[in-house]
Image (cartoon, rainbow, N blue to C red; front, side):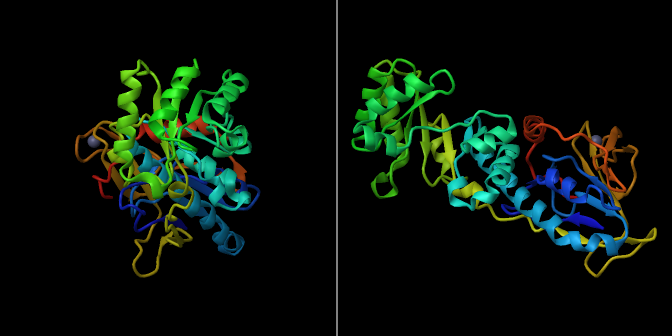
Length: 349
Ligand SMILES: [Zn+2]
């Protein structure tokens, strides 16, 4: 059986994730699995996974397998789309409170693999081997009655562990609260603008004004962190003034990747339903020119038709008759690999 999709939300490439749980699902079964590595960028119609085995044994796992891949990959894909929109500015995943807690670790892991620079939920961060990243909540300022008192206390307790970011829109104007915090907090790293949409007007102009005043008063090293309902549509306009983003719902509620799982070969004979190409296939990638090729399954290199260099097979065997062949990689390694790949839809398989 082959896993692939006809389209990716956002109409660009996708980022595969969820392979950790797929491996757990299929470990100890009678199946063998080949997959592109977790964190791989893929295009529509490219095979991402092949499962070989007795269909009778595999069929109960078909639905959970797709559920594990489709949602996680949808989140990783969206995280990459948002990261691309943010260019070099880091994007932090703040979206767990919009989703059921039982899937928060999956969402955070997928967002991180897709390219988020950090996650806010402490349990998720622990599972990923990261330090959780967050900023001061409005609640702390409301309880302590002003922004600089809250920032000062945060600085005192947490400055060894995490950058101090002042939240500057709780009671007063962003510009004046930003200056007060910059004045009073010695190690201030950034100010966070989380202005409610009812007060926003033009977020870019608010941020520009804050930047101008901070620079004018000698605080050009204080960054601007923007959050609140951001996505890949709203972020590009803010890149001129923002240094980092907190993104929530847009990533955690990402549309799923519509992977399908179909029989393509029975006892070595190519066979598939209408609308699917039969036969086991491999994805080859040319290391020289980036050409992507879908060809009959094989585990050795091909000659790239575009540049004559070697095109390497990308799908690798990860499970053999239920035995897991690869040690799980750290989330950081998977993320490094994921974001090292170009995210362009130029080459259609
Ligand atoms: Zn090539």
